[in-house]
Image 1 (cartoon, rainbow, N blue to C red):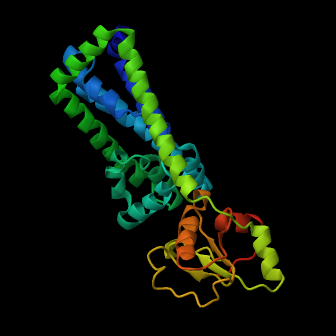
Image 2: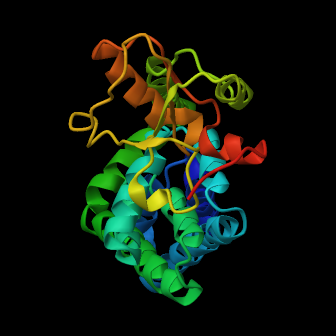
Image 3: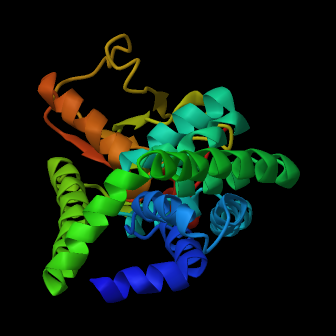
Length: 307
């Protein structure tokens, strides 16, 4: 454990840079505790508060710019990929869209305090066309607020943090083992939350080829576009109704309970469509299925959409 503390004293800025960058790029390695500890170690004079803050901001901005330009280049698909590698539940995309589209770039000022929000909001900023200069300004300010709060707290509670580090140092290898167990427990907890979330939405899905075959054979399934209205600008599957979780109680589906109902969205693991399918099943409809891959899979397969 003492060896780890020596490394932190000698290479504190480098460790902070790597930790912040890896967390912001999407890995489940929390950087806030590292900033707290390095903030508490400022009294030792290895580096100044300005150097520590600047290091954290630059690392965060570099990672966020990578997601920003990925969002500009690949659009919404990059957010789907992001939530597949993240341990945060897939609903982070939908929640991030809701917040960012409601208040715009100022959301970047506090997004780093919300797990799973930072990298998704950066990708979304690129996807919706936020200007690069605007993104850099708000993202840098947000990184400074986030890192600065940790550094200030570390400085204010430096004595308590020093005592904790002394205890861990006296424990030797057991102290390092305790920190390792805490990190593993954090990652496992995130993984379990995601596993439970996806499992709760596990149900039969219909492929885009099956839906196309149904439509061509003369079958008339009820097709529901579960995306918010602002995401339907590029078109919908022909004949689709518009319905969201917020309007599901007010939109009446005039059909027999045994009629096929197909819901689609544009989110990872068809999260929104699957959640709404569960709600419709509770309302008595028997043949309800999400469209596997959503509108993206439909478009990629070359099938027709309507304005």
